[in-house]
Image (cartoon, rainbow, N blue to C red; front, side, top):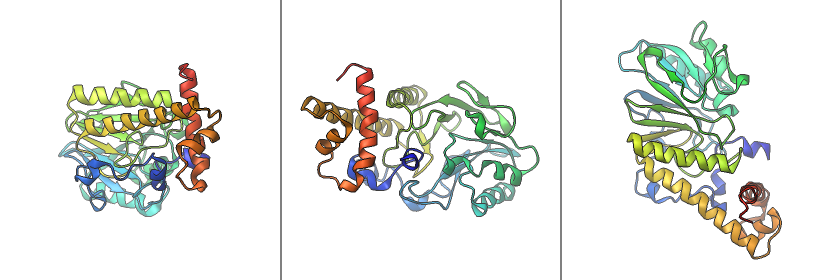
Length: 296
């Protein structure tokens, strides 16, 4: 179960209702095409797709190169897994642009985002720091917390704490592009696994929704999958999906289910039983959330 909780999403879990790949935004084309992930981005952000596709990482991890147009120095966010070819490719893209890496940032510490960070920093040049919320993933003394502003290479990049997918999850706001870089808090399609507290995750989604509307966000740059050019619709979908699932769990309990397994037997009765252990783990986090709020 640790492997499940430490991943970004499980493609096959659409059968559990966690990963709705038939989301209307995807059908309409708003969520992009899979072939367009590598190289997608904004004026300041470019995605380099890591070659680690799986049921748990979707098409692979999105590594982001962020820099002001014409600047000599860039920021790399989430170098990805410890894959030498991928790390070298990211470094070569930067040098091919006539630029250098000034800083590495991590949205969170899961290995598909962070395992290659220190190796990449070595490839990128001497004394390139790696900044993260969790001290275990840093290279250098400086971490990241709510309200930090990164200005490497003249870039303005603001840090927001958005726990839920993991306790150390961060979101980065690029105001000049109207871009919200969400790591695994919001994915390009499907829904994410919540390793931390569900209450924290719901609060993070609500905060991102409010922020995106007030700031006029134009796009979400996720940790996996294509970019989302309708942030409000994407966040509304995430919030509604979580609320609907909670309502189903609550109804099952009121109908007599007492344990996570009993809830799964009701809510996921039509799902292959091989997936029930994963469903049970998720349901338990929802039961904890409901109990904390006196809803059960």
